[in-house]
Image 1 (cartoon, protein in one colour):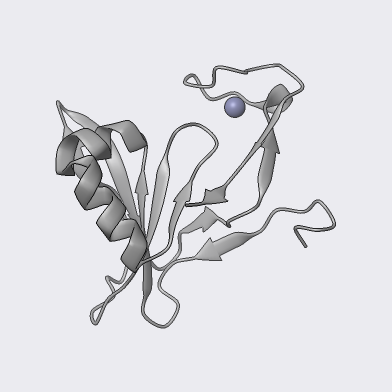
Image 2 (cartoon, helix red, strand yellow; image 1 turned 30 degrees about the vertical axis):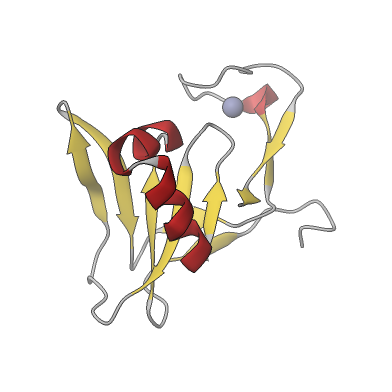
Length: 120
Ligand SMILES: [Zn+2]
């Protein structure tokens, strides 16, 4: 699908998969430290999202029956979701063109510019 230019989603809650969906990778770095983040991403799949976010794929013995949105809060603001049943993330190597972006945090809003979900 990716080779043909399509995007795809990875649903949470399948078998033992949940995905931690962080708004801002830099915030995660500041929180647990760059070394810990690198360690984590060596042991499981981490994917950089096009707007500076980070998806951390995790397997768990107990899968929550629903998503947590948010799962972490900092200064009164949700900084991460936990995607489980009935929720998903956009899959690695999918790409978005920011021309149609309406995210406030998008630095390329309205521009014909494409970035992708990159595994790291
Ligand atoms: Zn954008």
